Image (cartoon, rainbow, N blue to C red; front, side, top):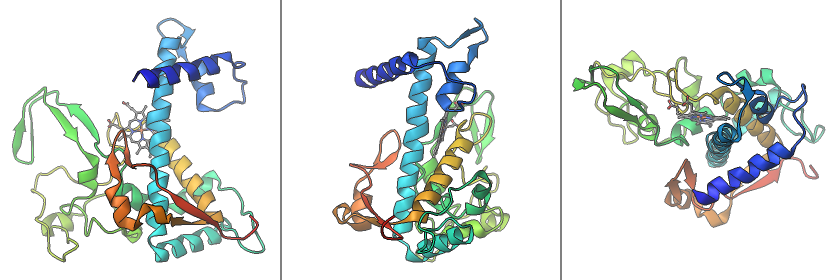
Length: 288
Ligand code: HEM
């Protein structure tokens, strides 16, 4: 923690030493520097700005970066998915080709068209794997149990998004499940019948009153869900589209294949690979 705070102090000093941001500067830092504390009417003090910087590092960069790593890994292991993504990118003019070595830069309008890219990897490898916590304000009943007021409830995201009670074949990377309407909700049919496991069995159905309707919540849910989710989605989808439009990705031999990746999985501040996910980026068009 001492080293972490020293690093943040250093970044803070560098930010303070810069010229004040111009009116056209829309960076996150410029927004933070323009903020005014309503209690004092003054810009944020160092003590207020420092934790905000910490949030941008941990909540912002770490999460988005690791999500992109997991996504590139998943795609690299499934040639049929990779081919489909390439076709989708080509259809939107985002794929490098011999006559077009540098495709156009993805724009905001492309976000809605590229939903196939990242959702399944965010389900399989939710980087905020340990989830979040909430304290109950009143007595409540959930799944047949009474939970007294003041209880701290932990909502772990990895088990929820990998559970055979709410997903068919949860261990399989199947981006096609996102082509179904309302895929982020557990259908009432699946609620009744239970889901199908990889072994072809039916996992027990969820209890009738279980609050499981929304099953895809990598950014959590509710009034205090991730404040950066739109920024993160924009960043992840446009960066992945840019990278995948220009390169194909291959897992480095040193990773030891999927078994090696599984063995190196660690849950630290985020779900990640010990030593990083090493991959080769192979240009789609030579000389790129
Ligand atoms: C893949 C990317 C990201 C994932 C998976 C993610 C996930 C999460 C999750 C699960 C929470 C907990 C919410 C809760 O307690 O209900 C959270 C909170 C938060 N995230 Fe993110 N996040 C991501 C990107 C970002 C970015 C880009 C930023 C800002 C630049 C950000 C800023 C925050 C902040 C400030 C909170 C605390 C919100 C609050 O307590 O009201 N996150 N995030």
